[in-house]
Image (cartoon, rainbow, N blue to C red; front, top):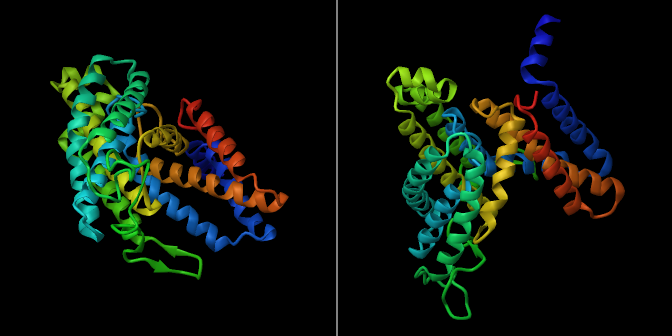
Length: 346
């Protein structure tokens, strides 16, 4: 009994209830004609698509820079790497690898200046980060129309200038990671090992990084800035490193999402990822100054699981297509709930 109470206290009633609700949806799915194997496949694919973006929250949270509402800065770096890769007509694994390398390069630059700005507004990072995300997206909306891209698959057909709103990667690196070492389980369920392995590699890198001297210093800055300063740690430097790391991880996450989705969504699309990514890690048990890899895994599974299962089960139950309405209600409900949990959803 003591162990059960400890588990409930550590895991939190909120996540237990949400987890039980998700389990109930899976149990109810066959009753209403929803295939469980297909549903599990959808949840795992959506987990692989979004997990790295949620993981990008960890470094900034650990440094005390708060929740990264400015994640569009990193996502735009990933989009830039993707469209440049298409410009070179690269396909398959080399194409997505080049996209990630270019994305990491731009993300490091963007993250450096983003970190400098956040150091100037200590205490208001999350508010300013939100403004930075919106401002940078709208600035890049202008740049997407004037940058000299020429690939017919990317540019608008009327004048051959400016990037399309939606760019297909079908002929380049569509499902490269999804199909890499894919493990078929049933006719409708296959484990996308490429995405899962990439997430595991990036997560392992983050875990190992925080075991290093620099990673420990970043954690110290987030936990106790006065102690860190007294120990001779440069708080501003550690915060900049954490912001750069978060931005670089986000750029990889965006490319992983694009190869699975099949399209590069340009212009305002990065704004759609800020609140879901923040909500997912809070739902997993993170707080505004502490986050772990398990928080990322649990939060992403719960968020994407509820988001995937609720519309399909309810649609079949009432025999009316209200999936978009339900998706909006569930998504925003989970976001509002997660953002009001000061102690990581407990």
